[in-house]
Image 1 (spheres, rainbow, N blue to C red):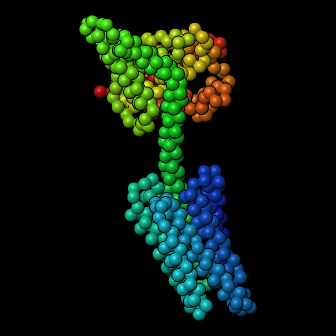
Image 2 (cartoon, helix red, strand yellow; image 1 turned 180 degrees about the vertical axis):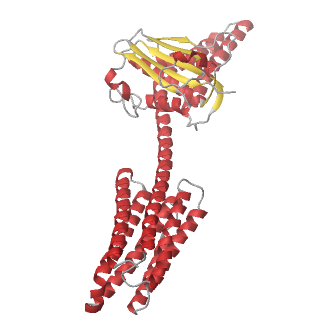
Image 3 (cartoon, rainbow, N blue to C red; image 1 turned 120 degrees about the vertical axis):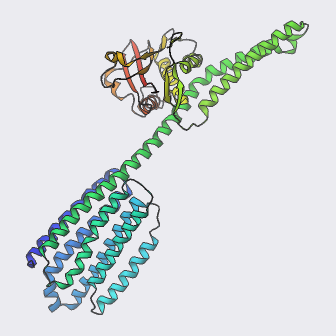
Length: 468
């Protein structure tokens, strides 16, 4: 048996460990504002306070029993409330990891019933300590069962391991009734320290697994917001040029298919007019289809498609986005007989990304400027042409360059940040280039920028070719 001084030292060490964990989780909660971090901050601080209470009780208990039985009973009641509240806090923290939507009402009712029963036993002078340890152990075992039966999720197994270690404290503590008051074996003190450190480690792993999953969900939601904002921004930029195209289409239909135009014409002339109307209607239908593909909310789906063919088909719409004052030049791979450039990505987002780069180039380019959209195949054998940081492999490279104002060096590193824009208020959301960066990286590619003030900018997109 250790002396009371050794017992105080062991409990002080436990209090320091648990309060340190509690303070760390409190700091994490203040930074990330995650429910699990707050719950475990409360649970660990509760364990630390319980160990501190044990120190105080060992020091003052002999005198209280002799001098003030009423105060001694008050401390016993405080121990019951604090111990039960700590058990409830641990279970609440477990739920926040393995079952965040689970109701806590049954847990609170069970805690209140346990406190009432334990207080009644303590008032009557019964042995409450062993029963309280049983209550705590039952709560931890219930947490283990909940973690084991919960749906597979990050942190579930780590939470089970942490509770498995924690349950050893009350389980072995039931032997304390056989020990002399104010003492405990050295092995039990060492066990408590090991259990506290080990359970804290597994709890930390579980909480950070939950944090990572939550961060991924938030990033996915942000990506959807960026994609939607970029789609709306592209729609606004295309509205004027598309309206002009539709006006031309309607004018052609009225000019060739109207009653005045067909009056007095021969059957052959009427057939030719009908064909011209069919062509105009087909152009209008294609415009409508392209607009709907951007206006309709899309779920990102990876598909296998020929990027070079899709890029070539996109050039007419890119010219409408560029407007009549800017000349758009297309230099699209492949040459005749070359194999197609097959990518695995979302084809609609591929269109949006290219149109967004053309729109940005148009905004930066003066009247009579030039925007060049080019592409080429970059096989693995030409790895010397890859920029630093891009791993070797087969790439389909898309280049969008302009003769515009360029981007200053001091802001070049920030242009892909969400909501960062150099445009005047009301002319840009700052989400266009962020969505470009997100899409290319999601497709496994890379983006580089070469720009000089007064010369222009060149964005180069490296897409890895689909294997097989």
